[in-house]
Length: 301
Image (tube, rainbow, N blue to C red; front, side, top):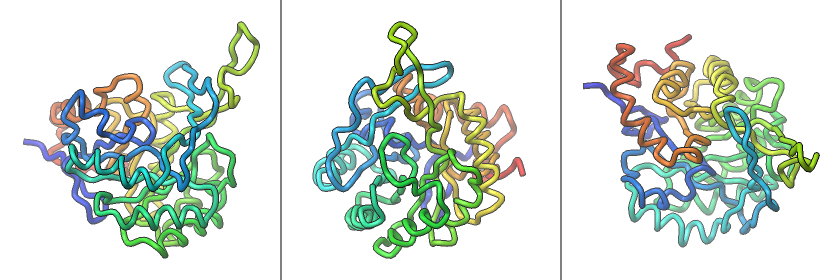
């Protein structure tokens, strides 16, 4: 019997598989097609202080081994997420909920995180300083700015805070260390890369916003490399994200140093992606002589 359970800081997860924010709605939508209680956790749709309609369409473009999105943090705002969305999810889901919080200023991050911190329905706060699809200060590109956001959020929260980082930086280790030094409880990486497509018929960019977040299997090697580098530099847990679409990918990400693994774009291609991965994990673990996932974290080092 293999052991799929992992620890994310002080939190015990029944398995490491977590749908990534923005690819799984608020979670309860998927409860209509399978029992979402098999999931290790759920990172809900990115939430901002005010409601956002998002970017104008078209805002999705397909590409080889992935897709580009420019949704633009469409969401109903923190108050409605607390009053409507979280109760709907908690009514059908018993495992850890991760609130993904976006913002446009340090003050907004702090205010929104403080509000969600008061909710017993949420176990972890994931602070997204790295969305490529909105116009704002590039918090994730500066160690000083990302540290300021981290400190501001930690001052007004009691729950574990994970900072979600961008791959579009020169030195990901420097950014991650700044988060840790500022008090972050964990790191989520990576967010999407920045890309674009051009329609050959119109000779214009496919996406209205011109560029967007590139995700899917093609970015897995980049995500693995960054998780590997950051694992060697910090002493806080990492949620690995980027291109994961199979049980083998989950194990590879954990060997690089991830304590838990988020599955993103795969959910948009195959709604049963997370379910399939969880069901396949025991057989894949046996194939590679793995008894416990806890024991392989950072094993590639």
